[in-house]
Amino acid sequence: MFDPLLLLLLSLAGEAFAYGDLRFSPCVLGSGGLIPPAEARCTSVVVPEDPDRPEGRSIELALAWVPARGRAEPEPVFFLAGGPGQSSRDAYPLLAAAFSELRRSRDLFFLDQRGTGASNRLDCPSEEAPLAAWESADTEQARAYAIRCRDALSERADLRFYGTREAVADLERVRERLKAAKIWLIGVSYGTRLAQDYARRHPDRIAGLVLDGVVAPQRPFAPEVARNLDEALARQFARCAEDEACRQQFGDPKALLAKAKARLRAGETLPMRYRDPQSGEWREEALSYPAFAGVLRMYSYQPIGAALLPRLIQEVAEGEDHNALALARLLERDVAGQMALGMQLSVLCSEDADTLSPQPGDEETLLGPMFVNMLAAFCREWPKGMPDPDRRQPLRGDYPVLLLSGEFDPVTPPSYAEEAARELPRARHLLLKGQGHHVLAAGCMPKLLAQFLERGEAESLDTSCLERLAALPFVTGPYGWEP
Image 1: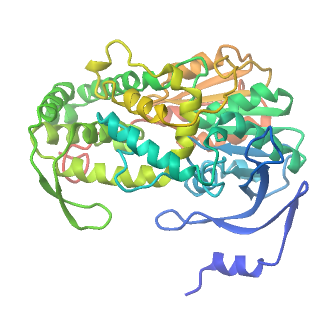
Image 2 (image 1 turned 60 degrees about the vertical axis):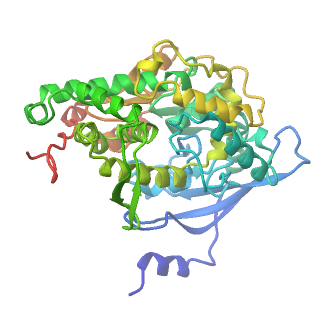
Image 3 (image 1 turned 120 degrees about the vertical axis):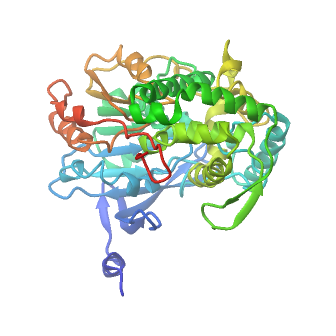
């Protein structure tokens, strides 16, 4: 049976589409699977690797255009992905529902930031890689791995020029090629840093901003990762205490976590058989403390993952590690597949390395100093670029800004958005109940997003529809949230 989307693309294969002075051809975003691929129009834009040396090596940036379904407004929308290291083009099929209302009257653009996706992606060797989430105590292993990755990638990239400063220059170059007088930026997580840096450098080109999971420029992001996670877990545990089914099944999750941590730190684990969640093959290994911490961290990002946490913590506290092992295996593959680690290091090591020191009280947190120490070990071997000297200054501007936060976000808590909004007189912050990290597609947000751009202001938005949002019930039994 023929795929209708494939047939359509074949019929349009010889057709070109123009936007500004760029020419686009039909393409498909996404690889299928559980998430259906999305039709788009694609092109590439050649830029100098070093923006200050246009005569030097060039790289191609992959750009996708998803046209408005109706008559398009003159100010297009750019989506800026997170990570750093995620592909904006790959993210579109996952977020198509979030943009469904917006597409009625807006052209959408998805530019793979240099070093990601199809824009000279900087992938480190996958074999013997440290944990994708970087929760490890072996800093010497991290340094050795960083050296191997640096040397491999340096054959085709100058790693000093893959930071946010260069991405701002790329985005401005693409805007010029599209001949768009002003643009809207929608950034998620790290994408909010890129959006704010672009707006700081090119305020006259900004129609407005949507910042989801806000990174506040004036906050030292990396050193606060451990504390932010612990505070998010504490809020989840308090929610369990207020839920009768969760309380009866698990008692005090905080006490269970302390028991699990003590057991793993004491090395009281034995190799355990479990099924690989992707291949289905049987594997055997012992659960490490860093792997367990990484699972709790990443599964707290979204409501469906957070609903599993008390049950998972109870299992590990009681010595049943097979589910945690399977989830750790799945995470290593998923995170590594989504993130271009080389690009991530070029950003963080150039822009955040000077903040990498453990904070008082870190030893008592789930992550402890592991994340900071691991990143510092990577950065000791990674080439450093020249970041924007104003990158830690708060953004100021007289354009509409909508800031979005999830109530249980473990990495960019709502306080970050409040701090970022203080210098923005036309900003409005929405806190979505029961949600985690990035909330563009939650509930009625797609409708509110379209209304915000249509009106050009956030003050009049009726956000009462968000009150219907709530956290998912905790999983209390093997088949879901029933006992």
